[in-house]
Image 1 (cartoon, helix red, strand yellow):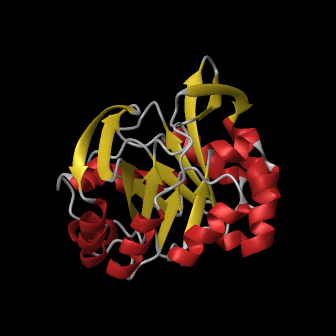
Image 2 (spheres, one colour):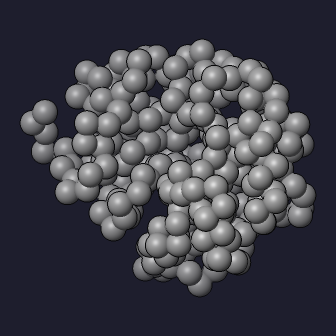
Length: 266
């Protein structure tokens, strides 16, 4: 496609590979919730029911984040993982409160396809190495919540509650070097605003790594998905509220992406 906004990456990513559409279900007290800039949460439904609906609609994968597990020092709900595994036939990732190999082992054995670590990885970077060694890189997703502070992008922990001094770009590169198989990057500045993904930052990060990058934070309409794939060449785009509240239907989204020469699985 000839398009001035189209971004031709030198990376191997995206070359002949279908782009993935991933609904994200933030779970609190057993319910799916969604907020704006990580606050003002409102109910979005039963996570298992939503997961089943998305699998029927043609979602490529699902991500479940127990958003208060780390903050409240709880473990992710194993029963949720088992229920999802019984009801969906697409890969899903689970995150929240995973601090050691034993936590990941339980979740993977309960039916999760991948595990996502965020705050625990920053506090103990060796955890990335240990998980990759124990299970394989393809099972380890490192989630990064980033926020612009002055002229820097800084990593935030505990559901965005705690700012760190880690610069996002260098932390993501370290995570890759330690064995992360995938990066899930959420822009806190864009999250829930429906103003579009942070394409400038995503493009910059995607140029620096060779593992898949999932864009998160800011999806509000179909054009935002088209833009993120054309302008950054990320491997996947993740969204929550636009899917949960029926503002974007996955089959229609994929058809629109195909008309813009973006390869997707139907």
